[in-house]
Length: 220
Image (cartoon, rainbow, N blue to C red):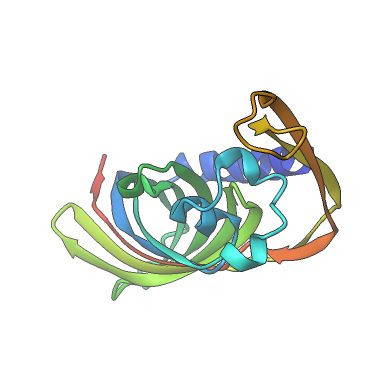
């Protein structure tokens, strides 16, 4: 976690430095994202609770599948090194996925790239989400109408393989106990029964993410 915070601090410093140089734009961003089979996709599908993402259950491989969900957020863009034909850009993008499913999956990206005079753009940078820190790669086209910029972008965030360590847990149930096994003879009683279980070490993938978004940025 300290390494993640340190990395984001450096990128934030670069972004703020670029923000002061030429022109800043900001506005909402809408879109959709497809997540391949991962803990995050299972959370969106309702097969995993948020507190289960740290210790995946033994049947994880049986329940995992991909998920498609909406994106909503905000983008801050700064331009620097204006070469007329090519302009350098720094983007900060905060997105939330899954709200139409009643879920809340936030992510933050800082991307550095370039935009050509024709509107073609590409960028890359760090991405921070519940799946950890990763790199995001994006490209798209900026449609411009007066002071309004409408960037349409596709982005890819590759996942990685993670090893979950083995752990032991248990399930506590309040059930009826019949000592002699003969139902209805009056010796039955209710009791808490704790059933322990062990989950062995296994590897899982944090999932790849493919997204498409459109932004609406106005010059400030």
